[in-house]
Length: 151
Image 1 (cartoon, rainbow, N blue to C red):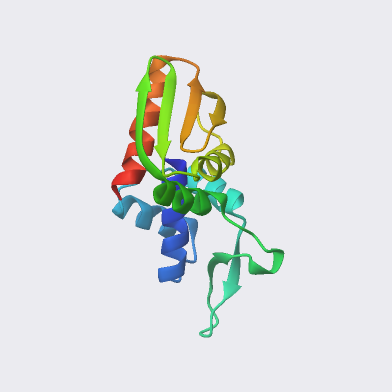
Image 2: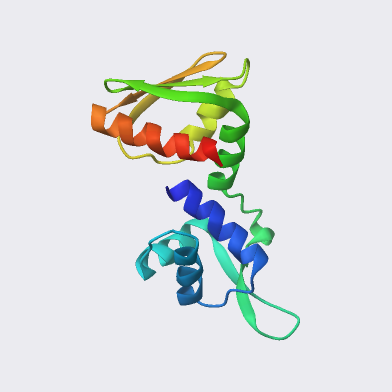
């Protein structure tokens, strides 16, 4: 969910001159993300967003291009959706089937984001195995990844 929210934040700040956390929170809620002001504040920090001045003199959130900031959440989303065919689980193991040769890239992208309940990952040529703490974590993780594939 965090990866999707980060991707949506980047989309929103690209589309709108958002100048307050409250406005960002409202726009996220309009898009179906139920977030608190504290969550928005953490997201801004994690994405390393800055306020820049627009031509009309107002300030708004933007990606800090000067530092070469790269959003791993957005990269993960792109790599994952282009590489993965399907996701399934059995017990506390998650299996991600990828197009041939893309499992390592998808796994590296997956590892770049902290996911609740993930113990470790192992990638082959077209398959990723993910060890989860328990079967509930595995089912929740599969649901999150499946939602990404639907978009």
